[in-house]
Length: 253
Image 1 (spheres, rainbow, N blue to C red):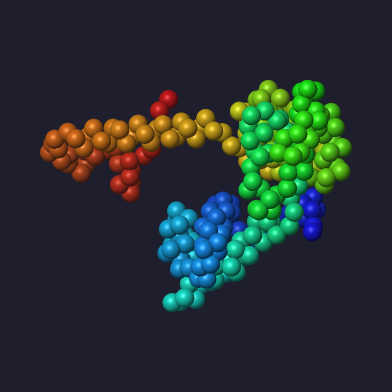
Image 2 (tube, rainbow, N blue to C red):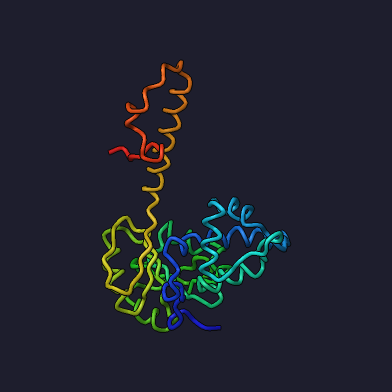
């Protein structure tokens, strides 16, 4: 099986928009669930609903893959699973290193979904000498001093950073210098990388803040709905609405 170092996904070169690429894992998750239930075909409406998008957007996304459903039949589930997996580069082996084996790093190491999605945790790395040699998820933790050798030996092109924020940039620089070209960053900091290196940031605190905003909005809507409705404001006075009648979502300071 090919390793990830010399085999990058072909999505950008084929002109697939980044927004479409971001939705492909959602479609794949929904399709995998259908496949596990032995569902042979699915309509665009059913799949769009399962993935949380509208059907027109789904059909547009699939057109970039060269996949068109059959009218009255829909899409072949197994073929779509293969198509999307191929586009995402999941039909090959992607060795991954996790740097920073604290609570979060250990939790990721123990996550069972990597292997089934084309990823293999090749190494766990930490700066704490007391962690060296300890088994986490059946893998011995290695010291960060050996990072470059580990990257080269395992042909790693994807690194996961779960260190404290203050250490993340230095770890990132070493990963990039060693040949890593894609980084998933869980550290609470913004990383600076050269052209040709892709970074995806996962910030749990930001996601919680967004959820808090929506909870606040729902509570306000509930209070508003409980109040007696007053006279409707004239159309020209409804300044809070956007051009499409939407209320702009503004995050609290």
